Amino acid sequence: MDDDQLQFSVANKQYISKKIYRFLDTLNSVLVVYIQITSFFYSVFLILSAVLACFLADFINNLVHIYIDSNDRYTSLLGPFIATFHTHNIKQRYNYRNIFNMYFFGFCIKFQLPLTPVFLLTLCVILPENESLPFFVIVFWILSSIAEFSHYLCHNSKSVFLIQRVKLIIPKEHHKKHHIYDGVNYIF
Image 1 (cartoon, rainbow, N blue to C red):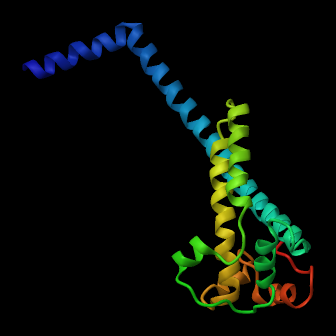
Image 2: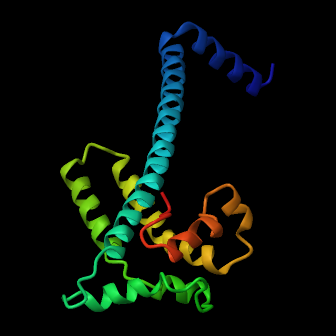
Image 3: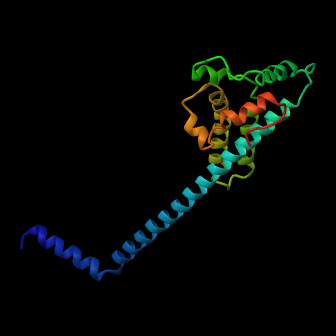
């Protein structure tokens, strides 16, 4: 028997005869299964957080939209922003902008975008034991920002027809009524 075979045989006998090796093997298996189970539940929780963030981002953005649409305080400090926001209802098609220009400048006020994560991040500080809250905040904020794209694409793009058809982005025909009649057919 050569050296390698002898060492292999001795190591195998140690594994069988000493309980510590089987204990460590079992402990390793338990840890692996535990990590897999917790990872699965954490992943499910993160997915549910993302879905909730999607619905809440849509809901809050629409509440802000409804509030500003119904606001006519043009002489207030925010009056010029309100007036600019109201001009978006006049247009059925916006001037073409490249997507980065549109994202940065948009076409209406977005005061809720910086305020919302500040509020939600404050919740993260208050509730530090909730591990999925920061993920929720990030997804919520990104989706709130993407709402600008959604609205722009609803007006200007023919390439998003399929996405509109499954109602991930509002269909143009549905949204057109919002621009014709005051206070109808918001996104939610």
